[in-house]
Length: 507
Image (cartoon, rainbow, N blue to C red):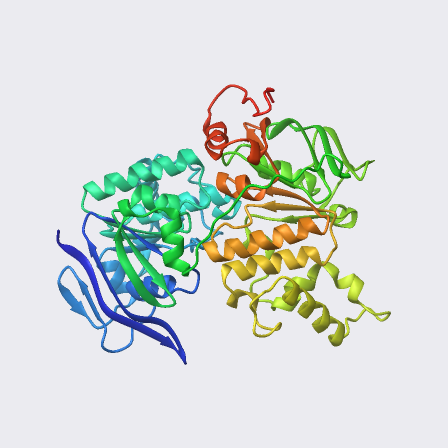
């Protein structure tokens, strides 16, 4: 098979830090290849060298379809047929879906836009992956999943020979993931090479023919995907073995902190009832679009229900805003930490303290620097955030450490209830393990935790009870140590009918 792209002895330094060390990579036309590694392993640096954003150190070689390049620039990379879908999507929020999909065809010298052709091109790109987006909608008004689809469509609209997808399925429903898988098969048949960068290791085995593993900037090896499983890959990526077990904790006698009774919001969720006790982690899973996030937003005062009741410590709670929820002792970590959870250009300390500014202010309304530094450092140490200085911009941290900053921000409010919406999206296995450890510690302190995720293993191994949500309703309750992961996955994937709980009752 002819290689479309060959990299030989690729290295990259940033000052005294070695980001890549003599990495080789060969990508044949028509292959699905997965690139895996922890955050900081060098994956992003390697992708940026392929995209022409960064130049490798002298001595490295890049060959595209047999032609040698000492390095690339973005124009050359694109002209060679390389398209990269970055994890942050790199979309223009103020432009429409059609404009974002067709933007690549209008770079360069100014010229009039053929709007009919632009729309037709966007429609063809969407049809290739079975997507259905409003072409006139502004990207800033789309859900995360639909923004992801728009970015994939934009890559498809270009004449790509190599498509690099950085966490392409992190925010897609199972149906959308299946459509993407079918697209990958179609692209492979047409001779296009696809590189997946993913922290969801099950996708690696499902899609790839070969897997390249990076660790600390060096290539650990290249392996046939059929010989890998998630445990082997995790060990290769980190040098450590990870093994999770279900919890058999009994919370029957614990105090009920949050009680939700017959809660509904027209068109989003219906007749939802659940209880969370002090120190308990309750998992909530289901496909994207099942109503999980809408329910979470209602519990945080941002999406007022139309019927039902919420009680906190036994007292009725009618929230009209998120400020009221915070005052009541409810904290919410959004799945979209970059846009909703953090102010990326602000410091780590400022992001941690934003929820407790009033408590830190003195009589003159000013925040003493000593109190600011002391409080920030307390939470940095408590949550083991790897940050050289609290005044560094939060954007300089890895995804796992950014998520810990979000957790620190809310823990500073001393919440009674912590709602975690997909807390490990886009972070590697080691960072996930660190976040799970923090969540367990918070539960041990008596915080009632609602853990929302579409990753069944996440809730199965890290929650004491798991609720399954489908089409806006709770359709099943599972106790992990008394049921199987396969049964829980089957309940999530089911299309119709009420699920039956392992205790033998219909939900």
